[in-house]
Image 1 (spheres, rainbow, N blue to C red):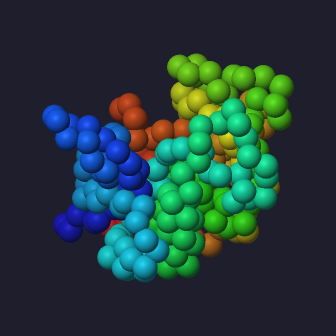
Image 2: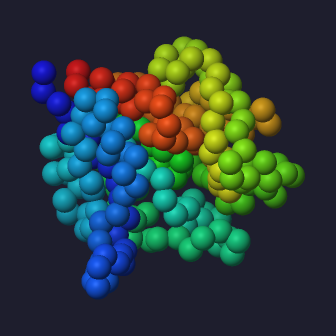
Length: 229
């Protein structure tokens, strides 16, 4: 059986190895390992110019919009947030265009953390630029603190992992207004959206947590399965 090519968005920034310091395409290895374990072939996508996006979309069988620096609030009409890490406009431009092209082509895709935010913004949605202010607590931003997510069992996320899952997923931004065609399908106990699904798309999901980490590879397996079909 043919192993489908799964694109994974990546950083493009300076890195050091040996005595060299050079601009490099960087990605946490967990994404590639999870795709390989699920039966796919991982391909890193550096955030270069926009001219190659249609070629990526036509060559790939599936796409992971990976985590990274928060989206620039200007993308969705909000003021800059000084408490957040500096945005990366070159990556924002590339991934927003890539997400739109993937949606238009009905390419199976999974947005992870920032990737869910990219998908939402690409569809015209907005984000909460600093979540602790909006909810009155910092539990979402606390590293290493697990919490239970409630999931719609009829959604693609629910079909992959069930109606609830315990995750560790620190984040300071979150979905505010859903983009066109997106449905909320997973929620934290304070009703912050932790998962979305693109209505009418053969496989278009976004989750706030990291399904590529740990032993539970079911969401990545679902993506690769959709890409294979």
